[in-house]
Image 1 (cartoon, rainbow, N blue to C red):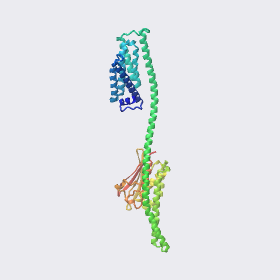
Image 2: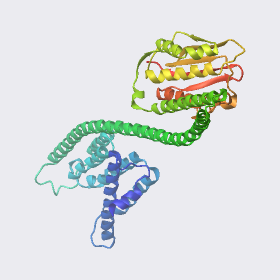
Image 3: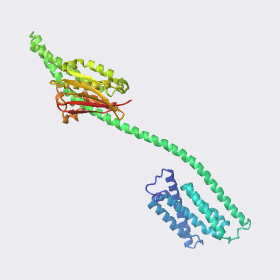
Image 4: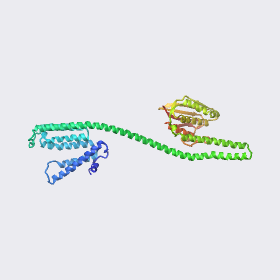
Length: 443
């Protein structure tokens, strides 16, 4: 019941789980308990059951206003200091009526100091201690003991010394508690820092998990596209092979091997080659996510490009293209995958050259913001603006490439580059050539 009532008076933004929040919550509960006790005492006096001069009504109103102010303003410092002031002012009449600085009630002044220390900090506690000392000095000058009935055993000076010893001892206890609290807070802050770092790590891992989930979702979507598009694209070369193989068989059975029969066999061979290329491209795209493709080693791109140029030598000669390889850096990458990127991009540049001019493909690089920017530039047929945005999508084919490609090579390049922490794009003017660019981190 007390907790529910206290919860009502706590400010909305207070974090109960924190140490400061727990302290304020405990103080509110204490004040509510005092309020209930004072209410009982007030009604006892009001109905004449006992006689007491303590200002219960004033204290009830003051404590009620305190609780309401905390609810409205949420100012915890003002709330604690106001409660300490209430204790301070409430103790003064009893002190003055029972002997001033010689009164046993003088030691009740330690409670405002204790409240300030427990619920605020040492600075406020020292401030209240100075107010207590100031009050003692003032009372010493203007107040003389008026009640001597209880001073039979000890002299008045002994009361005063006893009070001073009590306040001094309590002050020392407060300082000791402050030292212990400082060490406790330091240890607690250290643990909170560890928990904060662990929370950040969990949040980071959660973000990574979300990214992996998104990648898995994309992979599943691509897999669906594989199944649909591959089934569709495989039908044509398989149908061609089947049809012309049957025609060739009939001709052979009839011993009528003519030039047309040989042409049928050429169709079978060409379709088989296209089918083989498509299967290899699909396997290459599927292998990008394998664990082997994630391994990174230092790769000398100059050596790799010389080997790629040698592998493409037949295509280079057939298309009469000049391939220029500028000095390239060493990069940390998966050798097989990064060579596949260069091979696919150079092969595309060779494939879509212009026959009426001297064709040229140039490979170069620059450095910017901790990345290498690689460029494969050609003076071929170029790519239309409307096709540039979707050119890297799986199974997408630009118009000029439909007869020779299956739309997998560029998508494979994009996947490999992004897996290496880079990005890929194309800059092209239709009829003026293209520049395929991609980045890789340095080091």
